[in-house]
Structures are given as structure tokens and as C-alpha cells.
Image (tube, rainbow, N blue to C red):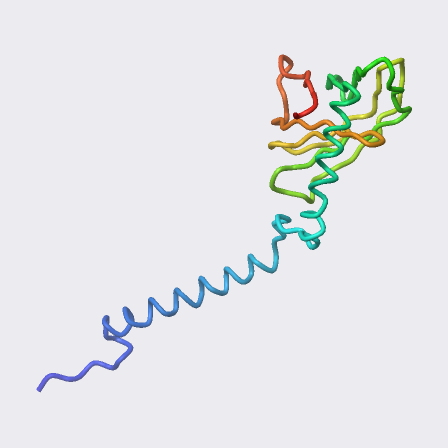
Length: 165
């Protein structure tokens, strides 16, 4: 008479245990990733940001009304900005440039640019990770936007920003 094997020596039993066990391990790993990482893609006040769309469009219209055009130049860890406008618009003494990463909001940065000449501004260049960024230059009631990929080569170190209308 053939001696019966214990259950833990049967291959079929282990195959039956393998799939549910791998699902449990995969689920635990997924929970760990969800807790440990912050993707930064969802904002808390999405409703308020949706209401801000009309205000944002008004800022772009104001940039077009003032005839604003900017050239942004990165050189030796400095940001230089040349801003041109209609003759009747008085350029502000300080403007702010926002670097908004497309997928990782935790890396977003804002830099105030000080006026150094009639239409020139400068500030130190912040440390920016590699990726696609939205560069937003803002003044009193206007803004200029451009999407760029950083870091840039020497040929691409100038960015033109004009009103989007």
C-alpha cells in the first residue's frame, strides 16, 4: 500500500496558496506606497481653483491690454528678464516668477525679481529638478505663461513669454 503524503508536500496545495498570498503581498505593498509617497497631484481646494478661472483669464487679458512681452534668460545661476509694454503702462518695481512643475507640486517655487534697469529684472535662479515646468511671470494685475522643459541647453536659454489670446 502506498503511503499518503502530508498536505504540505503536495504541489497542487502550494499552487492554490500562491495566488491569494501574492495578492495579499501586492495589496500590502500598494498600501505602503500610498501612505509613504505624496504624488502632489490633487489640490485640497479644487473647487476654489475652478472659480479662479475667470480671474485668471482676466489677468491674461490685462497682459495683452498692456502689450506685455517678456524675454527670460538663464545665465550663470541668475535669471534675467526683459519686459516690454505699451508706452502708457508703468512697469512695476518688482515682479514675481513662479516655477510650477507639471506633475510634482512639491517642487514649485516663486522668486521675486528686482528691477535693475528701465525694463530689466534679475534674481538668483532656484534649484529646479529636471522636468516640464510652467513659468509664470506675474505683476500687479497681469500674468504671462510659458511651458518649458528644464534644464535647457545653451541654445534654448532664452524663453519668450507673450500674452495668450
